[in-house]
Structure formats: structure tokens, C-alpha cells
Image (cartoon, rainbow, N blue to C red):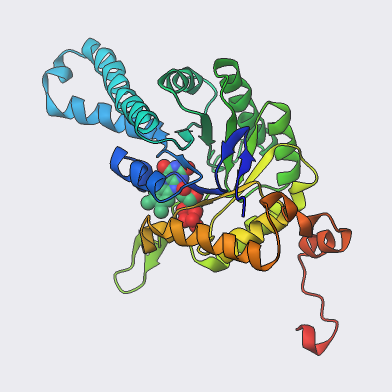
Length: 326
Ligand SMILES: Cc1cc2nc3c(=O)[nH]c(=O)nc-3n(C[C@H](O)[C@H](O)[C@H](O)COP(=O)(O)O)c2cc1C
């Protein structure tokens, strides 16, 4: 069965992309992902906070900077440069030592500094760029519109600096994802990833303190991304990648039937190893053969073209009709 797809203008041998995480932060694991058949790899995000932390670490190491504050600016830009240089080396290695599409990722929350880094990533050879944007909504003065405008501004700015296709990885909390995705598409986004799964704090009630919640998803978390992939797949023309909670080929198939152009997986590879990519790919191919499909295009989006199915995905309330339905 032909598993090839096009995602954000890139030709992928199959629709299973390794999403951005520590698994894609070094050349060895990127190479392993490619060897085990990844359709594409999204490198670990280059974080603004991480670059600033590097700066602080450098400054902490030497107290002379306390006495020579003018040196701080120099160190600041030097540390940033160093962080970016490491990332560029990872891109160059990944490009020269694998043949899968390599998507760079930057975590950017303002349209100001990051577009510049985007063009450096492009020069290093990335095939596409994913913008991992998460603007914290903790300022009561900031309206929803202003927050969404900032997402759009970031895409507009980045598109001025790069020619490679750009995807935006969104979190799940928006009042109207449809409108936002439409705006992102107008600003030039080639694809949208639905949805990112953010760090989740929890509370330990024995010790009465904040602890880290599970960094891994469960398969039950797949339904909300699936709903939005289905609702948007016929309404927007940019590509869609399903993400969060896709742990098996069954999850991959569901997203493709809903209209995803590709999927991104992370947790399942942490739990089962990067060689599990081979199982995902062969199980996907087996399902397709059993259903008598010879290509992904023959069933992709099949369940979202029907208005009754759309209504099912739009439905949010449990209305009690029959006891069997409760
Ligand atoms: C340890 C870890 C690190 C991650 N780092 C990033 C990152 O740097 N950038 C990003 O966009 N997503 C990051 N993610 C999110 C994953 O790419 C993915 O969106 C999320 O885990 C949901 O997919 P899953 O259900 O397959 O795990 C990270 C996830 C984990 C578990």
C-alpha cells in the first residue's frame, strides 16, 4: 500500500511524524527515528527561555560581570548565539545524515526577535518550520482578540523571513479555533498542528505541594484534537496534523479518516521506543489493505465530508434521548 502523503508542501513517505521533544533533540535519536521509518521529524523546539537561562548560567559563573554590567549585553548575545549555533549544528547533522524531511521548531511568543532566527534555521537546511506558540492568558488586560492577533502577527513576520513552509502548533484552548486557523492560513501558515499538550502541574495532597503532572498523554486525550481535525478539514485549505493521544495505528487511522494530512506522535515513542514507528507504519498499511485501499488519499477525510458526521463532531452536550444512549 502506498502510504505517501503531502504535508505542508513536503513529500512524506508515510503520515507519521515524530513530534518535537527530547527524542528529537540530538542527532542519534533523530537518525534512529529516520531509520525506523519516520515520515518526518520535528526537532526539539528552540526556546527563548532556554537561551535566556543559558545567559544566566554564564553570568552566574563569573562574578566579574556584577562589576562590569556593560559586559552583560555582550554575554547575552553570545549565549544566544551559542544556543542557536548548537541548534544549527543539529539541523545540519540531521539533514546530512538522514533523508527524511526535517522540520525545525521555535517556541516564540512575540513577533519581534524570533523571525530572525527562523531565517538562520532555513539557511542551515530545514525543510519546514513549526512555530510552537503559547501565549499565556494570565493578563486580565489582554483580550482574547489581542492574544489571537499576536499569533497571526508572529506568522506574518516569520513568513517575511523564510521561504520554507511554516506550520503553527496550537494549544487546545481557544474560543473559536476555526476563526483563528482561518486567520493563520491568511497570514501564510501552510499547516496547523492540533493540538500541543502543555506541561501540566498537579498537587501532592500528602506533601501539600505542587508537583509535575504526567508529561505523557493517554489515548483518551485524542478525542478533542480529532473533533477539531474533523471540523476544520473541509473548512480550511491549510494542512492539518493531528496530535496528542495518538498511541497506536488505530489512532493514526482515525485522524486520517477525520481529514488529517499527517499525525505527530511523542508519548507512544517514549513508552515503546523509536522502533515502535515500524509497528505503527505496518499496522497502518495492514488496516489499509484489509479495507482494500491502495493509497492514503482513498480514505483520507472520508468521515468528515458527510454533514451528519459533521453534526456529530459539532455536538457538545449530552442530550438524554434514549436510555441506551446515556
Ligand atoms: C518530554 C517532552 C518534551 C516536549 N518538548 C516539546 C517541545 O520542545 N516543543 C513542542 O512543540 N512540543 C514539545 N512536547 C510536546 C509533544 O511534541 C507533543 O505535542 C505532546 O506530547 C502530545 O503528543 P503525544 O500525545 O503523542 O505525546 C514535548 C513533550 C514531551 C513529553
